[in-house]
Picture 1 (cartoon, rainbow, N blue to C red):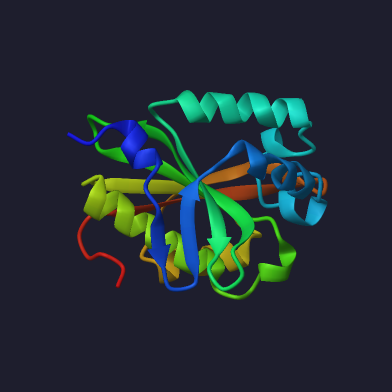
Picture 2: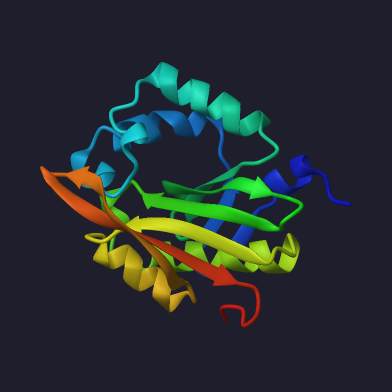
Length: 185
């Protein structure tokens, strides 16, 4: 059996992107991105306006966790750290996990980096980890992400009605899943 440390250290490459284990040296960029309302409007309230200390505490938690794997998203052409993605709430027995991603560097938005990263993670989850299902949550106003997820094979499984407050409006949260079967090409 492959150890969790070996899995966390896995480099995943797909065309435009490289996913590698997040490092402490990546945290300054993360703190900067997480203070930008244009970036955080798509993220959970718990990751908005984090301090360096909070980000380091989070890093130490996920770095030692056996149920989380976080990767920095690196643009291949210039080796720039542009965001993060991760697998969370990993259930090794049920062979399921939750996926989260964000592109923090807005200069890389709308250039398919999220699509390539999502496809890379889906392949990793089903081919390397041999999991049965990956799920995610996305706010109904995040049209760009919903399009990416559908393109990558995720389907709507549930709608959490009006459970997310943003801009004084309650929005639905979509729960999407990808079940092992037809892998993303």
